[in-house]
Image (cartoon, rainbow, N blue to C red; front, side, top):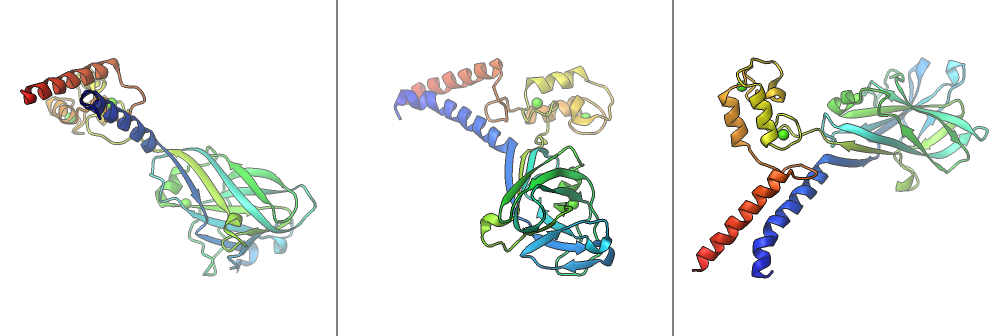
Length: 286
Ligand SMILES: [Ca+2]
Ligand SMILES: [Ca+2]
Ligand SMILES: [Ca+2]
């Protein structure tokens, strides 16, 4: 690195690092295989504890009804995240249906079922993906699941998402011991992490800067129950000098914070720092 670049490049590298780190921190993609799988026959509470595949079957005769259950561990996704999109891929091991039969994916509120114990029927709740037409055996099928169909914060908080497969035709779906890894059920979730809870950040953009100072100033000496969003960073119900101190102690404009584009004032500050560093190097050489 040339001497000129040493002076000029370091702040730019810091800027580039800050922007890329911000992008990585905000978006997330997980692909999950189930941690448990079971088929349960509702009216008898009979479990079919095969992990190699689960059945789904429904006819208007309770003896002929099975629901296939899959349980996914969501603990790698921070609570408060927003789900942007979800999909579930299942692989048929066998079906005894006429081509074009459908299968539905439900969310299941009860997570306490287990393939190693005899459990009461957990039921099925919200419909997340509907009417996927199934044609043929030994084929993969993918459902787009609707993230607005249920309050997924409940599952992010308890750490598990249970799904129930129902269908009028008879299906075996590979569960945990498919012939190969590609045949395991795969839940794909594209999500956005919640804003970081940074002291002094009033507007929730993960930066503590002049915009947050303005919020503080606009509410100065007001009592409030709205906390940091109106400048009460200490949470004591009053917007005052103590909150200013918290803001000042955490002031970190733009360069290292999670921002798409630094504000002009931040570029000015960067240039000031740059020239200050340049001058200091010249003084050191003398
Ligand atoms: Ca749950
Ligand atoms: Ca802010
Ligand atoms: Ca306060």
